[in-house]
Image 1 (tube, helix red, strand yellow):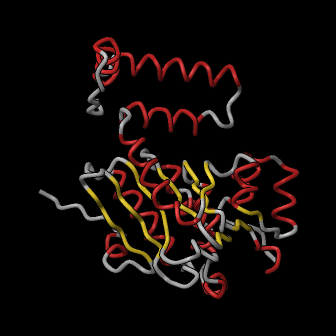
Image 2: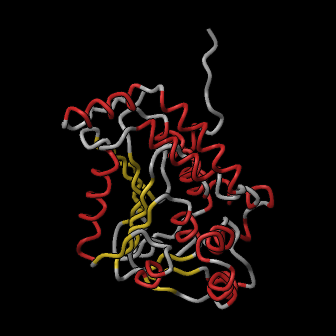
Length: 268
């Protein structure tokens, strides 16, 4: 029998600037940026982050993924010098790597505090939930370098907050606070800095309580219909609903509701 090996497997042997923690009891995996004080994200690190998200997506121990960082700053952005050293082919993959949280079928939470700039902001935008500390400052400062965001930042931001606010952030390299991000509908929640970990743990526990298959379906449906027409979105929603109708989890949910007990979902 032929043994298959991923050509990029070697990239996972020595993680550059971050680590992975798995708590099987809580069904939680943490990807922790760990290059203090500013947790700058290197070019090789982007490739590794993509592979880690893909690996965790296949890990049966994990239901929810948290992207967080050591210290008082989430990330001040990418390795500036690395952009000049990278090949055009590598640079062309930046957005694909950073979009890994969005492609992941499982819920992904970004826990942001302090500087969340450049690629740090972009990868947070690719997550499903952004929990912001009051210390958080979001920014896409590439204009100061004679560049534009290159990993999906301006595109994702515009979808979320509109063209006027996106031009204000991108074209002026303007910082916005965690509170303002929440007011704009960009952050899911804004909390005191000392409460960020508790808020993250609470959201993980809440998400784990839902049906895995229903959650995966909801995430994919919402992502797939973001650019679709209303009629096409409703049609696709109906097909997804119909498919879940025959799932064991839906039957369990209905029986638990009528039995006035907590459901036990198994993801099938």
